[in-house]
Amino acid sequence: MNAVATRVQAPTLTVDLSAVAANTRRFVRTTSAAVMAVVKADGFGHGLADVARTAVDNGATWLGVTSITEGVAVRESGVDAPVLSWLNPVDADVATAAGHRIDLAVPSVRHLDAVAAAGAGARVHLQLDTGMARDGAAEAEWRALMTAARRAEAAGSVAVAGVMGHLAMATEPGHPANKRGLLSLLHGVELAEQAGLRPSVRHLAATAATLTEPATHLDMVRVGAGLVGIDPSGTTRLCPALRLTAPVVQVRRVAAGVGIGYGHTHVTDRATTLALLPVGYADGLPRTASGRAHVSVAGLRRPVVGVISMDQTVVDLGDHAVEPGEEAVVFGPGDDGEPTVGDWARWAGTIPHEIVTGIGHRVERSVR
Ligand SMILES: *Cc1c(COP(=O)(O)O)cnc(C)c1O
Image (cartoon, rainbow, N blue to C red; front, side, top):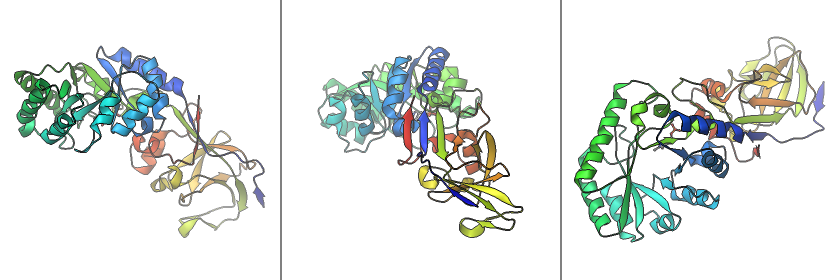
């Protein structure tokens, strides 16, 4: 038996902006600091402009992005809040940033000098490595960075608006590295003030520290994951905002002993019914979740069998056959027992962030 779909609907990612709104309000209530909505990576895969607008409408007063290009996209969305871009090469397009009123993080004297040389009067945030050895100036360079910033500010070629750091261990509340990171940032602020700078926005905390380490909030918190319902600290429940659905395109009955998909990694141990979904790893379903993943079909959780391929995923329906065209829920908020983004992350051995930012471009987007 082999039935072919007559009704075709595309795999669709539905973004629930009311969840983003509720999460934003939750963070605004949680802190007396300003809330920066971090909308990098297309708003964590939820749509940069939609998340930016929703966050600002619900109390966020800053926007944060990685690149200047993303900052320009925020401006083009019509949002008028201050924007900070924090990861740019030395020869970044400073004039474009300044022209769009995008603040720039400067992680080294070289970066600072390049921003100053552009002569655009850009607003900068001194970006300090507060314990990650990733981005930001190493402590040995701080004094030189402050001195260069003060000189450029006196010359009118930059305005120093802030000092920022980032925490490596914020997902572990109370970890000593969090206290060290805070002390490190405060030390940097002290050096800046000694150099004659008056940065008004000191910021360190991202989602996890905002939820669990109030001492780190300072003047502003930078919240990305939390706005889209991901709690990296595992201490609360936020509102997930994504739902990924796909139509069953084909249903087939197979006997026991049948190998499924590439490599026959799964062989049926009984006669069963298989459903084919037109989504795969090119659409963001992690191939490494093969053998563990489930999806919801007709309200029941069903195992994915065989390897997830580029465009296709096979689901074992057992004896609960459905008609082609039935909608399968790959993940959703979990309210009806469907798998969540968190489940997929666990099955793939990764974090929810990687799932939500990895949904492919050919998946249709629907916003409510
Ligand atoms: C991505 C990012 C954030 C947001 O982190 P979340 O944990 O997603 O809230 C904050 N600050 C910096 C520098 C970032 O790169």
